[in-house]
Image (cartoon, rainbow, N blue to C red):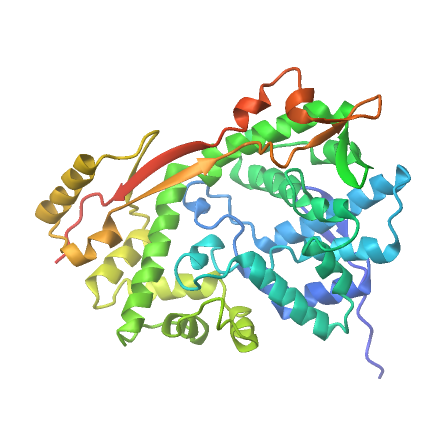
Length: 412
């Protein structure tokens, strides 16, 4: 009996957009590849589900959603006589599909603890180059667009700019799964208003209010969701757990972990030694490895690792205070003294339980302006074209300072 061929022109049902079609067999095969399937096991929003219980969606959801929106964008631009060949369109779909493939477990936490000196964008590029070998060079144009090296500048703007396809999906998707209505932008309307002028991605004047809402939504989502103080506390705690595990591994202390996580704990991984073998092991590392290890570390003999792991497992997070100006040395020393006296935390372990940081949010960057195409065919920065909002005010970065320290527990 002959082997039945797989139908590669599948349709997926997405909670945000409804039915999403996979445009061709090459993209189907890329999605089926283990590198891409790993994204099913990497959450889009890290530890945010400790604040917003519905925020369990994955990088896989986001990537598929981005591919769908890119199909719409290509369709819209073609109706406005912007020539995009089939080869170019396909490259755009692949570039946006793979733009986040280099994110590690729990996204940014891994970049600040286990893998150092190499950003997820670089790892994404390494994955794309490896997939290009697997698929006989069919990803070359997508890589060129992703790196911003393709002759048509607006292609890269669709992938990475202040109003790119990535942001149009994640704001709408994260708003849906968190239930935070302020982030619910009209991505359809914005895409419908897209045009190209002088090789730049622009928005027609009719879409100005949708863009204004997008900028405001992004600002609100950052303060209300991405930089929510409890989310910050949880993410910081996760980083500290991984840093402690890495320190213990360096001192040859045995830690229960999957073989994949074990490799990253016991080998110093930097930009310089991130080999093909490292990439292959990284492609098997996901949230499950980290969560399973943390559950085991709750009972580890190292009291620091055990306490940190317990805090995140049972959601007994660090207290966090946020303010508009840096904490003074006096404020810092007062908390230090209290922790040492009341909670008996040793000096050498203090930095795991008490630490300072800062976060900033810039709703609009005037150095990379969103251009509005006026009815007279002129291009205007939205900050100047907007008659309702003072977007120039929103272009000033807002910086907030935080300090984390434990609630009540004893270190024996």
